[in-house]
Amino acid sequence: MMQNFVCLSFCFPPSVRPAQFVLQCLIFLSLALLFTGCATREPEVLALPDTVEAPVHQIPGDLEKLLERQAGLSNATCNLKSTKEFEQEALRLVNEVRKRGRFCGETYFYPAAPLKWRHQLLVAANYHSIQMAQANLISHNGVDLSELRDRVKATGYHYVQVNENIAAGISSVEAAIRAWEKSPSHCVNLMDPELQEIGVACIHKPSSFYHYYWTMDLGRPMPEIKLPKPEKKRKEGVDFWVEMEKKKP
Image 1 (cartoon, rainbow, N blue to C red):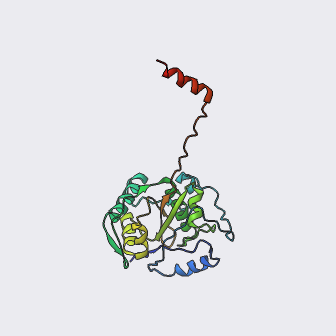
Image 2 (cartoon, helix red, strand yellow):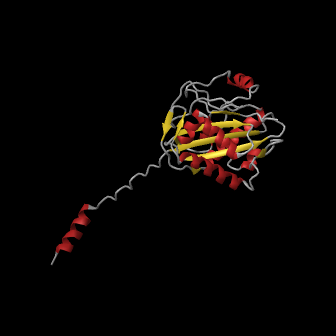
Image 3 (tube, rainbow, N blue to C red):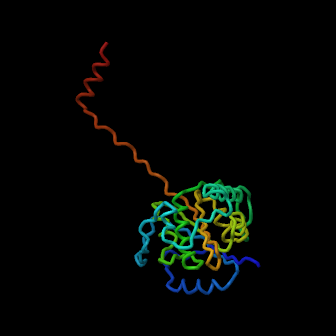
């Protein structure tokens, strides 16, 4: 039987939180098609007066804690020996895509610098894949109404830009990366030269329609600002006489 799969790379203007998005996603579940959209690009300092805060306060960094009390869910390592091996393979495949120039749709991208693995992006990705598996939905909005920026901030990750690809129904990490590579909007996220870090997660739920739920979060961290150390106040009188003593023959 041909395996159904779907993958999305979608965006909304930061000021929009669509109330009917869950209903739309239920319609999408009846289709075994490839969906495309646009990259999510959000500044950390954006202020949105009309945005309702999502109920995502803090996401635990331990995957086992995320999976606690989630019946029927497991971390999918795609027949690799360990979670570490899964992470290494995902990173290798993505950087293999980035090191070659290519067209994403009609836009050409030059080779991009390799990405680094970031645990906080992995945590946000795991959290979202778990939610998708629980609800049997493929959406960039969580069942708790969280958006990408909410989930990333909940891990303590401070960013200049974050992007996200999601997919479902794909049972291997190589097949997932290749599917995103062939889709123009997902390819843009993979090749974006502004991005520097990545986290990829796959959650397995055998009793669900798609079985495997993928999230790739990519980010550019906020640069660290190092303030200059305050200069020590000079004691003018003492310094003057010290200098005078040094000048004596």
